[in-house]
Amino acid sequence: MPTEKLLLTLCTGNTCRSPLAAAILKRRVKELGKTAQYRVESAGLWATPGESVSEQAAAAAEEQGLNIAAHQATSVTPEQLHQAERIFVMTKGERDCILSTMAELAPKISVVEASDPTGLDLAAHRACCSDLIRYFERVGL
Image 1 (cartoon, rainbow, N blue to C red):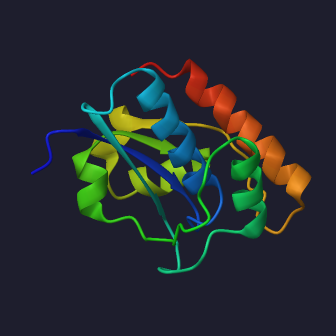
Image 2: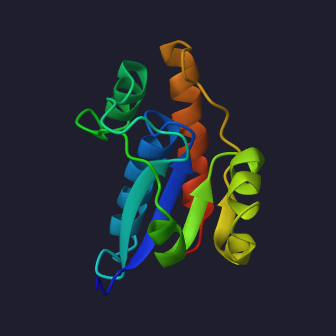
């Protein structure tokens, strides 16, 4: 069993927001010198496993010095949810979906409030990435 605490980022399909959030959060953990304490994973509530990250999300990440191009979508598991120290969901709807069957997870869940840029242009992905960076700069670990 890993000794690091799991920080889990979740979105709908795990091809845009949660991979971006995970990359940003990993960088934040490193900046804080806490890589031995935390590991970061991302997943989707309704992901198609193996689906590639969106080109626009990869481009927005690259502009911020992050590389998510090789990311492939994974579906969240109940084990991940229970194991996580903290769960960062992108919307209240995603939080409510989890809590509808696992109400005991409420204290672990934080809502980021990142709108879904899927299917939109690079500018929308840049804005999402900027919102995620601002959010995780304020998160205490």
